[in-house]
Length: 288
Image 1: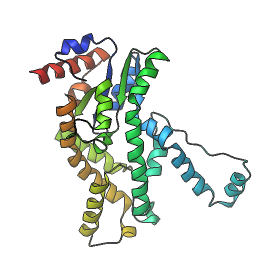
Image 2: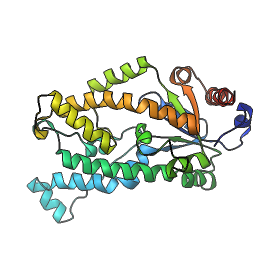
Image 3: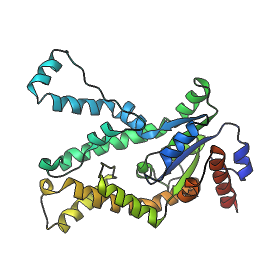
C-alpha cells in the first residue's frame, strides 16, 4: 500500500502497518508500545510457533519424554499431557525446536534434521504472513481495533522475492498494509552480533544460503565432519554472515514495496504519534 503524501497516510482512518528488518532493532518493542495505544499486535513468530509449528514442537517434546521410562509409561497411559506454552515475550519452544546443527554431545542435531525443520519453518512463515489480511479483518470485526501492526520476523526477506511484483506474500501484505523497513546502521549490526555471540539462538536460513555456508564453515575448520561442528560457534558465525546477506534484501523490499525509517529515529520516539510522524515523513521522502 502506497500513499502520495505523508498527510494521506496520517488521514488513513484505520491504519495497518507491517514492520520488518533485522531482529533486535525494536520491532517487537514498537508493537508492544502501539498495543498500549489501541493497536492490534500480530506477531508473526507467535503465529508460526502456535498455529503452524505447534504440533511439530509438541511432538518433539514427546519424543524426548518417551526416552524416559517414567514419562513414557505416563504418556502411553494418557496420565499426562505435554503442551507448549508459547508467549509473545518468550518464543523458546520454537527456538528450541529449530535447534542448531552439529555435534550432538554439544546439543546439536544432524544437518539433515536441521534442514527438515528449516523447511517446516519456511512453510510456516509464508502461511503466517499470508494470514495477515484475515487477522486485520478479525481485529476490526471481532475485537474492535481500528489499527493493526504486524511484527514480521527477521526472516521475512527469506520467504519473498522482491524482484517479483506479484510475489504472493508481498502482494497480500501490500494490498492490506503499509510495509515499513526498520533500518539499522553498521554499529547496530555489530551490537547485534555481540549480543548474539553471548547467547546464540537458532535462526532460519534459506536453503541455498545454508548449504553454501555449512560447506564454507566446515572447510574453514579443516574439512571437519558434520557431527564435529560446534553448534554455537557455527550459529554465531552464521548469524553474522546472514546479517550481511539480508541487509540489501530488506532495502530492496522497502524500495519496491514500502518505506524506510531509521532504527535510531524510532528509538527516540515516545508515543504512537511519534511513530506515525516517522512513517509520514518516510512517505514524503519517497514521493520526493
